[in-house]
Length: 204
Image (cartoon, rainbow, N blue to C red; front, side):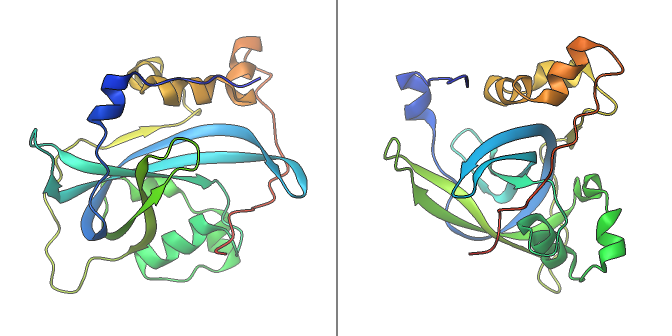
């Protein structure tokens, strides 16, 4: 049974989606979520998830902070996975299967890019959200932007209690539902959950 974190009316009013368009951005946050279950047309699947978040360095909100946009990915570098597609587009290089097998996505922290942002309306609540539709390298001749928010990487190995405590509540609730997190509570030798990952994040 999942945990639903409801937003207050104040929180809903405060949310403003980042502007649509192609933006200069920096990846300042990478969070390993863990294995989540998802119902698909083929049945229930288990998929390891990771969340990347970018700041739009040239798009500031009323309080002077940059807009940010996050995207969840299945933690897979399979040929048809969106994570592999976006990373290849970002660094401007196609991976061999051998390179993809050992690529450490934490290398992307603090790295600039051009981020294409689109707006989508949620069927659940009718709200408009900003979503990532594409990642590419900085345009030729564009200097690396000045990063505003410090880089932040959270992973299960090594686990960091302080980093976990600093995460937003809705992210912590997702992580707490994963078998990787529950295995930590069972003991140091129980964290061996290896789901069969069948990437469903195909580009269509």
